[in-house]
Length: 277
Image 1 (cartoon, rainbow, N blue to C red):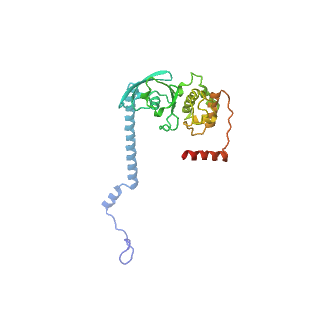
Image 2 (cartoon, one colour):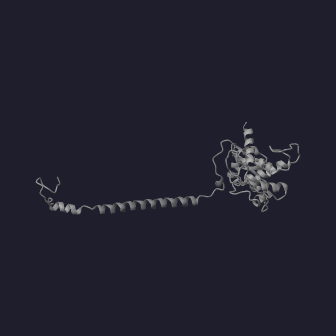
Image 3 (cartoon, rainbow, N blue to C red):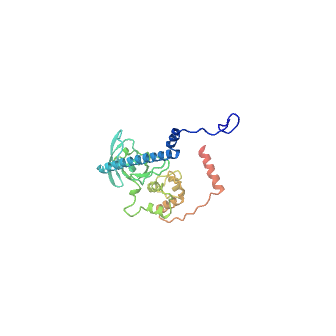
């Protein structure tokens, strides 16, 4: 039964408060007062914490600014577990480095010599983005131990041009738009330069018709086969082939493309099936 009614159902009035109870009730804080006090407390706590953090940060910055800069700070690295000293030439300049025996040429170029033109793609020797020239021969720098290059000459994409004069292959790639994102381009260009030198030496490929020839005049198909280890995920292959063909043959190449017809697709499928067998 409701507290405002007695047992007979008649309405009753609330009990009267004593003077002491009324005074105590008047002095008690309201919920609104409690809320304001809590908000003020939290605000003061956060402000104080941020102030201490800012003071600590400023003190740290002043300490770091006062420290003398180390010229080797950029190249700081963990100590080599099995250090070897190796000296080889990179783009015409002799370089001597103490390296972990497991360090590959790609990492030595990028992290120790700051030659970042050579790109790290798959890091497994499958994409060709890291291709450089070692004694004129194209090599996958991600699979080449730096310790094996004692006394050798390494040429990266940075070393192909002569000052402001581009290498003919670099100029041809620009002319024929042989790139899109450009990530694979350093490896493509170095590989193309090395590949043409291989052809001049008479080295044959899987699509060479006359293996007894002392010199090889490359067709577009031969260029594609010889460059198959360099992947362009943007699909700029027509421009790449055209650029290499012009540098190789000395003539401008008017390249057009079209979709493969059914006969060509059937031939490719047959060749793939035969290789699978």
